[in-house]
Image 1: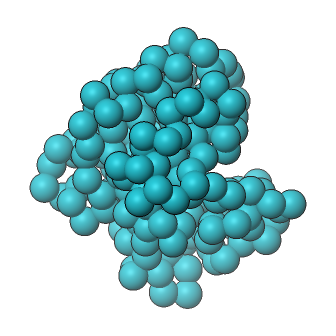
Image 2: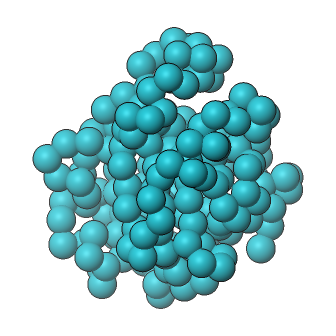
Image 3: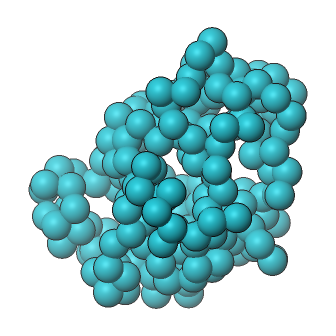
Length: 190
């Protein structure tokens, strides 16, 4: 497994200064729940004071949402992309499984995806066309703050939400909803 500091990560995103996100990290670490299932909250109210400075520096003053994705996850059964960057703040050590949108050919071959270790406190920007999904935990539960343009991943159908293109493995729960396409190959278990 590679690290987010490896050259290979540059195809998918870039690291950012953790000091710019210290309040997000502290709030994530101490004020968001730990769960035995994956829980995604698109916009967590306790992050609202931090939006202005992050929006100004990283999103060109565009309205943003800061939420979290916490829980237990040991497999990748779906990947998504947005047409905008996403910033992830690691509240624990976690694994990001990433792929390239340009590799989608009548679905996406999951064997093309790469795994990257993110250490607690690190911050990355995932570029818009990068396929990604829920982080995978190493030991215990993971915590990740998720920063996106306002409205992303919201809507009446969570599998096919605003600014979200989802590719799911045919045997996954996500495949039962509206999806953009399928993942091909075996479920990726870490």
